[in-house]
Image (cartoon, rainbow, N blue to C red):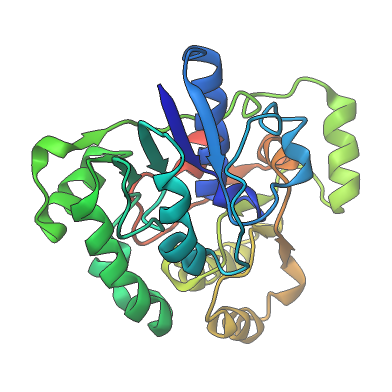
Length: 292
């Protein structure tokens, strides 16, 4: 079977969906070697994918566009018509509204429709119609949890028969690290002492980080001394979070690490004293599984 696989999230810093995409590709290559996998992306893939065993896979070579959605809605359908693919798989709803090839789509959560106030207004205006259209045109929809499946069927009025649950799993790198020198080197590199509180995720309102820093301030008032470490790329509307940290007088005790490469996340999880994840809504919550 010839399968087109959406690799657009592998052309940028990998957050949750990017890590999911990478691990799904790895698993397909290992467990389904007969599949003829072809990558679809609007830009060159990250160079580290060669080390991850992905870079050698063939990809569509039509002209790309720097803006992903423009490429997906205009050039990609033309490329797909000539591709000979039996099916194409998009790991989120950023997918063509019209495609000559049967399409499988991942719907990770319905936050865009259930909690639009927690997304930038421009994203809501442009992406809600796309989400609905892609979900109804897909031949099959994959959700990562029964909760996400129930939300998708209810909110989008989808045929339950075409919506399947395929749970995610952490990469093999997320495991206890017994090499003390490796952990000590990571602690020095990040300027951290073991035992800190750790959050991993995009820094944005729906992750509920204002409430987290308020709870952390109460811990400090009760004598807790370890720092709070926020690990993840900057999303949007973070001014309230920074202002609240300043108002609570805990700026020197809260560390923003920004985006952290995949290879460092397991080390931080091994070094932390506790992992915290106060998100208001998730379709699955992969960071929690990775932290276990």
